[in-house]
Image (cartoon, rainbow, N blue to C red; front, top):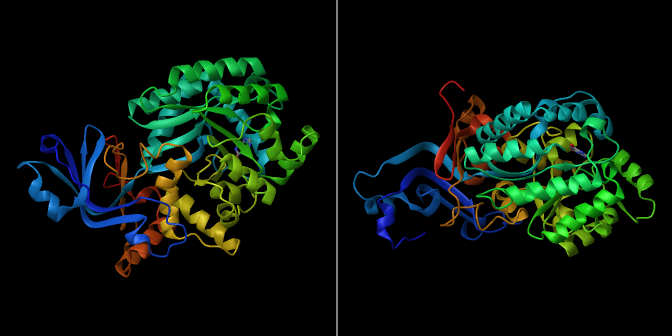
Length: 448
Ligand code: XAN
């Protein structure tokens, strides 16, 4: 239980009551992390003050300490968990979701690039950024590492939408100066200048963080990759995000484009783009040497299961990456991904692991989507669990959200089963409410 000495704060606090669950550390393969890495209070209070977590504890101990008349928001049958965090998602690709019949390179050309070109229109960029942030909240996601388009206004629009909702996003302008339509391409120098200007405007403005965003090695000239690497070296606390080793056709192409480099990973290494602030999306077709280099440099992988199955890219080797000491996050990768829901993403991650003869416990899945992903983004001092002082970002999950969940809940006896039900059968319908910085930003209506 967390204690608060300053009773004055309790005069001016918000109180939520429900079952509370959060992680204090990585549960690994622990089949029952209850006494160590995970904390669960069946009937708990989550007390917030000025947008931050003040305390958590059993209702029986805390209710008597609250000043009389304190309003308590009671989430009947609600499971309160930290807000979900998505470590790889594309704001401009909502309209690309569910595009039929292609693999990565055709998918980019046929569906994705034409759609991203629409973001040259600033009104469209604003509309989509608002839609995207509202949808994240509806799915229980309160923070994310986000690709915008190559247009600077797509970044401004997204951060403005995040600020309006008190959310903390990490995002960047796509750098792309070859093998893309003219209306999406920048230049090496122009992309450096635009990225720097956006970084100076948005990085650490309130909750927002900038991310240096070369799309992938195929769509950047060596000069652009070198400048992206230079920007990363000049700003070591800024995240870098790109794609890597997703599709075999992509890998063949990289080999042709960079014959002088020993591997796809070596391209990024050579240009100074690896490090503990780098998130590489996918990392499916990789070998032991790659994993070793990732672990040495601290570079992270965003595991994007719904995208990898939808685009037929392949099955990420979760166990091997973890055993090699690679930090792995979990991500929706919308619009290659088929859902913004981190619950659905957990379900698909579980299935990918099963297809590889591995498993992912519900504890691991919920850890990854919360504290684990906060660690990937170096934001675990701010978000990811209910430690006092962190942002009061949390989600209320409804274990009876659909007829199937209700039926399953009726004969569920353990917490692990309850979490597994939510991740396998749940989606945005299971999100009863999303709270950001202490304010309810989404609440499911009776009819939705
Ligand atoms: N590689 C990519 N992979 C993906 O899943 N989505 C993209 O937009 C992209 N661009 C390069």
